[in-house]
Image (cartoon, rainbow, N blue to C red; front, side, top):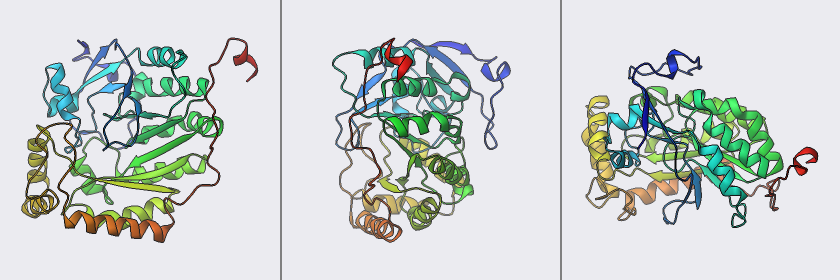
Length: 339
């Protein structure tokens, strides 16, 4: 069970950390945990990677649609504001990752940061667990992929550029909204969309492979943003893109309903009608982890638009400069001096 370390006081009172953007008015509680394991293996057909690392539980980005919210209930907390404000730091994550990668059974598969919550949420500025895990990957020359909304990733450009050069490193900046006001309303603790496009530009200039994740697409709210997001991402150096429909399993639904009702009272009914059009008349899946089924003609139209824009902009084209070689190696005491 995680142990409380700051309620209050918390790390922000003794450690200075730069916050990009205006922080929301929320009290933050940080807990520390000695995790039993850190490398998660995924077998879901809806998720496009096998191995992931999640240095944190909960996420201060407070995205109302986050499909991971029900995981906080396993800790005896809630899927609403508890998920946003009670953050668990797995303080032994880098040590566990090094031990996993030192095993003979590990073959150097790509590791994705993170599969559940954002690895560059604000507490990372204090704990640096993501950076320290990436340093382990760099020592082993293990390929990595990163999905984040956090502008804090700019801090680690040097390390990501090293990984891109010596192994393989791809960063996907999740950007479901084209304008800052909509982004702030639905994702109140995350970096503004304008900051995310600038983050893409900084990473791309450093030689890091950058993509944009138009995720989630919320019909009736941001499907009209797709073309602009892709255009701005391409201008910012992105070379790849993917999209996913909104998923509202279990207790995520009431959190999202409340946020939409408060932020878009005049559009709420139209948004729900559009969501139901891609869900066969339903608002959500019945449970956390349910497979996405029953996507209707409206979603087919969204995908058609997305792929047409990607072709027009040259996104998702073959990248002849991408490494297609095995880079993984276990460092030795002697080897670390000369490699």
